[in-house]
Image (cartoon, rainbow, N blue to C red; front, side, top):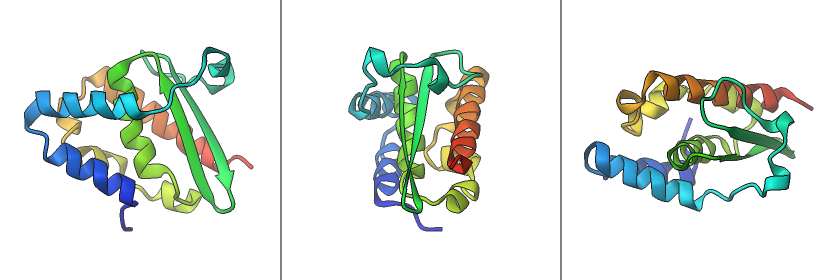
Length: 136
């Protein structure tokens, strides 16, 4: 499966970011570009369980493709969410189900720098994305 252009861009950005600090700076920049949910949009039904930080996730079905939006109260998490959304947006539910998420994080150079709690939180977001992708 080929990468969406936005996912290829973030892959290039993070692969060109030197080391842990460089990737963290790039993630913070990506997080700043992720549109925030206004306080009235941060509703309990959109909260992702299993995350240490508060994460809200929504999915719209546009024809056959998916469009996710997400927000978090944590800046670095917003950057990680941006990496997930840029990989997932525009895919069909079937395509989303076939994404190798651990491999995506490895390609980005992030898998080895995630704490266990962050890795678990990202897995919770991916599981919620898969669940929402199946909702009609």
